[in-house]
Amino acid sequence: MGFLSRLEAPAYTAMRAVLGLLFAFHGVQKLFGWLTTKPTPPVFSQLWVGGAIELVCGALLVVGLGTRLSAFLASGTMAVAYFQFHWKWESADWHWLPIVNRGELAAVYCFAFLYIAARGPGRLALDNRLR
Image (cartoon, rainbow, N blue to C red; front, side, top):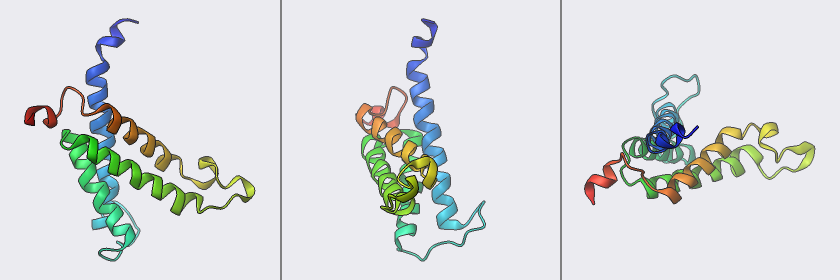
């Protein structure tokens, strides 16, 4: 299984880029209404600002630019999304569990982005070119 250790750097870069791309798609849905049936939120509302963060931070994570700050902001955004829109501070009927309140994706994004913020951009990132 030693061959897997040689894939660590490209796998991390791929994870960062794919998570960023998927996150950016959520922003595109919120801001432009593409690929969704939900209406776009009013400009500068909390949902709109969240969509802008998703789009911008997601795009920056794809290319590895401002990686730590973008990932940290994205992580915090997903923490807010989980607590405010999924859990809603309800404890009855196991509602605090992500599987019950449908907050699994927000929780996964939150901790994945927190890891990226702590680890940094990795080898293949524009951040490395700008140093």
